[in-house]
Every structure is written in C-alpha cells, then in structure tokens.
Image 1: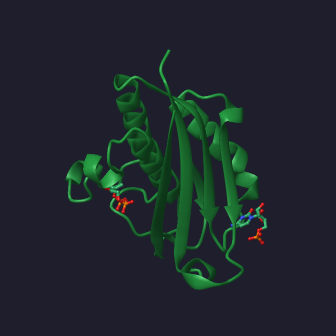
Image 2: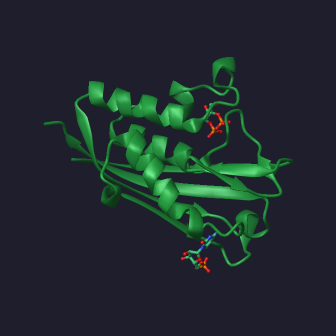
Length: 158
Ligand SMILES: Nc1ccn([C@@H]2O[C@H](COP(=O)(O)O)[C@@H](O)[C@H]2O)c(=O)n1
Ligand SMILES: C[C@@]1(CO)OP(=O)(O)OP(=O)(O)OC[C@H]1O
C-alpha cells in the first residue's frame, strides 16, 4: 500500500471560464497556465505519481513542450493512470480539496467526482472532492488564483 500527496496553484488571468476537475465552470476570469490550468487534476496527477514513486507532473509533461499547450488535463490524468497500470498499481481511493474564495463550487462537485471516477476507472465512492475558502485570507482569499491538494492511496494490482 502506498500513499501520495499533490499540491498545485494556478493564478487567474483574463478569460470566461475555469476548468476544475474536468468540469468547465463559467467565471469572469480564466487560469494562467501552459495547459487548461486544471489545478485540481494537476494536484491529483502529482498525488498518483508520488504514491507510485514516479516523480511529478512536470517531469512527465513539461510545460516547455508545445504538445501540452492548452491540453485538456483529463488527457494527462488518463496517461498517469495508464502508467500506474504498467507499474502494477491499482488505485484504492483519491481525495481532493480545492481552495477557492470564488466561484462557489458545491454545485459542480458531483460532476467533478464523475470525471475523475471515469478517468481512473473508480467507483464514485472512491473519489471525493471538497471545496473550501480561506475566509478571504492569503492569495486564494484575495481572489488571485486557486489552489488544490490531493491524496491518493495505491494498492498492488490483482
Ligand atoms: N469555492 C467554494 C468554497 C466553499 N464551498 C462550500 O462552502 C463550504 C464552507 O466553506 P468555508 O471555506 O466557509 O468553510 C465548504 O465546505 C464547501 O461546501 C464551495 O462550494 N465553493
Ligand atoms: C500541466 C503542465 C504541462 O502543460 O503545465 P501547466 O498547465 O503550466 O501546469 P503546472 O501545474 O504549472 O505544471 C505541470 C505542467 O507540466
């Protein structure tokens, strides 16, 4: 059994939506990123890679590589999942916390869990996504961006 942890931050820039855990959310700003900026899936990729001892997302998908420009982070998550399978790991469960002063995310959480469960071939009760503000404190509280944390538990396959 192996545990992994992931953390990521993306700043806001001009835009009209955010993509969080695979779900497009209308908003008055977008994410500054090389990819689609899905901070939740980036933290999750890092948790999975960390648990397997496989480094981090930047090692596998460098932000200097044009093939990842604007990429849907679900594609990256599916590639991480495929990598875990080749290393004989299965996922027990994952748990994410998205730190956002705004927008209110509660209504999008079920769709986020469904995206992750689909990409990781997990039952929906093995995927948990939470949201919290920081009570207007710090960079997330000032509305400068969004942070996400993730943990993942891996078991030997079979
Ligand atoms: N962006 C967010 C932040 C929070 N929520 C929900 O509100 C609850 C209370 O948040 P606090 O930061 O005040 O503790 C939280 O547990 C979430 O259910 C949200 O939907 N979107
Ligand atoms: C996802 C990747 C690759 O496009 O780029 P970003 O979208 O900038 O995201 P970040 O979490 O800063 O780093 C991982 C990257 O390698």
